[in-house]
Image 1 (cartoon, rainbow, N blue to C red):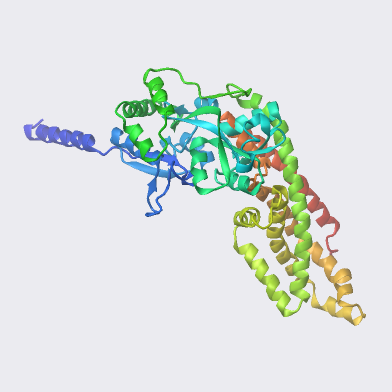
Image 2 (cartoon, rainbow, N blue to C red; image 1 turned 60 degrees about the vertical axis):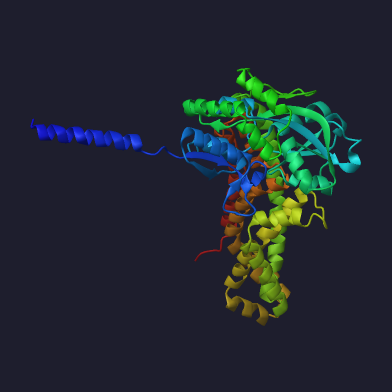
Amino acid sequence: MPLTVCRGLALGCLLLASSAHAAPEPELRWAGDPEGGAPYLEADPAHPDRLVGFEVDIASLIARQLGRPPRFVFVAFASIDQSVARGDADIGLSGLEDTPARRVAMATTVPYYQFREVLSVRDADRTRFTSLRDLAGRRVGTLAGTIAYDLLLAAARDHGVVPVSYDDDVHPYTDLQLGRVDAVLLDDVVAERRRRAVKGFTIQPVTVAVGHYVGVLAPRNGALRNRVNDVLRDAMCDGTLERIFRTWGIWNDDQPRLFARVLAGEAIAPYAAAGLTVSGDPPSGWDAARRYVPSLIRAALLTLGLSCLAMSVAVVLGMGIASGRVYGARPLRVALTGYVELMRGTPLLLQLFVLYYGLGEAVRLPAFLAAMLGLALNYAAYESEIYRAALEAVPVGQLEAARTLGLSHAQVLRLVRGPQAFRLALAPMTNDFVALLKDSSLVSVLTVVELTKQTQIFATNIGSWVVPGLLCAALYLLMSMPLAALGRRLERRWKAPTR
């Protein structure tokens, strides 16, 4: 081989090696939910396109020490573990609690912050409700899928407490202020933050349980988890973590003791509760399903009952709206059209929030009633359009013939137009009923634990969606398929005769 060719090959290999060596490190994608707010992570009020919070600072610290640029990935709090496991992000950091289920399902980092579960009560009740034992038969709110929720389940069994789950950590304190719940059990970090924004409640000094925040990585990323652990330990040694926590006002005497235990390599239990019998390691697979099936069936029955009530009200309202738009005077038609466009043009979730929380100061509706009314008022708008179209589809000749026979407008509607319109509307009405059954999953934002919410709690507690998801889908099919079959049967029975 010519010398020049050898030199060219050698130079090419050298360039390839140098370029590979100089290739930038991949981004460190970290998942979190800004809805949790400060001091965890939130949009900077001065610069809404920028995130701030102690979790942001910790993520930046880890990325910097690993030599990788950080990139935030928004994931809803309840889905962070699943998102990290499927590879959407490298690590989850969002006030994630160290739990037995999380340790089994994920690769968790060493604990980097110790928190206390504390009880918050209205100022007027601070001497009356000092512990969970004092709240027998009382409603206590918390965030679903957390250690606090597990503690409330144990308190329900041991002391008769009534757990109320929320999808966020803001509305429990709002409902405490409004009197919808008698107490809130959540992390001291959350409680102290909410006390600065919501007046009228006291944080009891008794510690119900002690837990820790950890980062979560996919089980296959054990090597990266070990590197992250080294970064966290170094930050504990050189005071970096202390400076971050002091910046956000959450440093306390619990943290030096935690750091000492972590640096000493001591095994740290996920959490410790006082005076409550809390289950240990999470059950897995079908053994867990056997335990949760009764609660899933109860949630399914609640979902079905809620959907039937809401659809019944929606049908009655929809018929009234449709009749008003067809037969009413112009002002009435304009008002009803405005209602239909408002309900169809705004999200159902927003309507539920406004009905339950927005009007809470004036009208304190029970959660179930607010959920039923929210679904009914929304679907009444859609039903009215179906019925209006069906009424207008009846041939004009039949209406003229009926009036020629001397029938009044009410008799024409009841005897001629209404029955035919109902037959035309039956198929889309059945379809809407099935859709409403599924949309009922949104009412969990009003603390109604329907089927989807109970499934989410089940999945969070065992660290997997496979079995809970299959059971949930099966129950929804068991509820929706008979409805569809009934609709088809009625269609065949009332089908217009063919010549």
